[in-house]
Length: 367
Image (tube, rainbow, N blue to C red; front, side, top):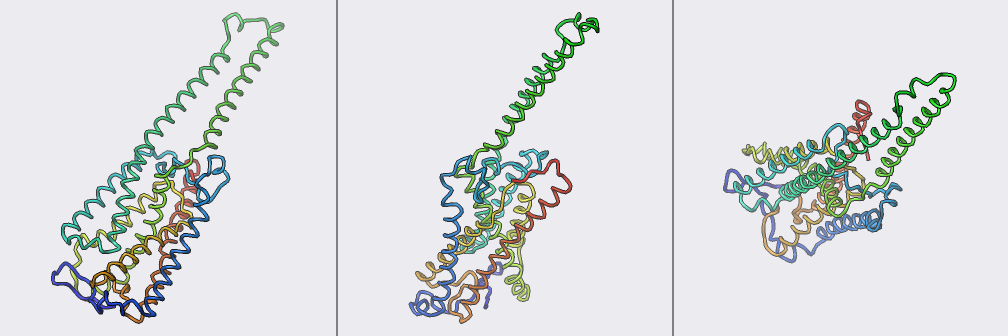
C-alpha cells in the first residue's frame, strides 16, 4: 500500500497509481476476482435474509412463541437488560450519544469538507448516528408504554387487595364471639371460602400476567429496522476501528502525521458509545444478520467502483486499488475480516449475560 500526504497538513490520501476511468483498468483478471468476492458476499447475504427473515413477514404473535430465529418483539428496542433499571436511563444515554456523534460529524465536515463522506468511516458514523436518533425515538415511546404498564399493574394490585380484604374480614363483630361449640364449623367454613377466593384471585392475576407475556407484540417495521441497524453497526464499527488502528494508524505514525482529536474521537467514541448501549439494552444478536453487515460493506465497494469508473480519482483506502496485483488478496482478506469483527459483539453479549445472570439473577431478563 502506498500513501501520500496532501497539500494540507491536516489531510492525507493514497497516491493515485493509475487512470481509473480507463477501460483497461477494469477489464482484467484482478477486477474479475474482486468482483467474485463481492458478488459472493451479496449472494450469501441474500440467501440468509430470505431464509431467516423473508419467510417471517407474515408471522403472528402465536408463531413468534415458537422461538423463530428472526423474531423480534416490540418492547426489545427500549427495555433494559435489568428489570430494576428504568428505560429512561437507556433513553438518556441514547439522546446524549446522538448529540455527541452529531457534533463530531458536523465538526469533521466543517474542518475537512464534504470529502469526508467519501470514506467508509463516515458512512458508518452516519449510520451509528441514525441508530441513536431512532433509538431515542423508540425509547421515548417505550417509556410511555412502560409508565402505562406500571399504572395498570398498580391498579390490578389495588383491586385484588380490595377484593381479598372484603372477603377476609368478618361481616360483624358478633361473629367473632360465637360459642366454640356451635360456631367453629361456620367460622372455618368462612375462612376456607375466604382463602379459596384469595387463591382464585391470585391464580387469575397470574394467568393474566402469563397471558400478557405470551402474547407480546411482535415488532413492526421500525423495530426490525432498528435491530438491523444495530447489528450492522456492531460489525462496521469494529471493522472501521480495526482497519484504522492496526493498518492505517501505524503508517501515519511513522510519517509523523499529526492526528487531530476529531480523527481520534471518530475512531474511538463510536465503539465506546455502542458498547455502552450494548451494556444497557436488551436486544438480541442472531448470527444470520451478519448478512446486513456484508451488504453494507459491499454497497460501499460497489459505490466506489461506480465513482472511479466515471472519474479518475484516488481511492479512499489503498487496498481498494485494483491496479495492484495483490488487490484480490486484499479484497479477500477484508471480506474475511468481517467474521471476527462481527463475532466480537456476540462474545461481549455472552459475557454480559453470564455476569448479569450470576450477580443479578432476580433482576436479569433475557429474550
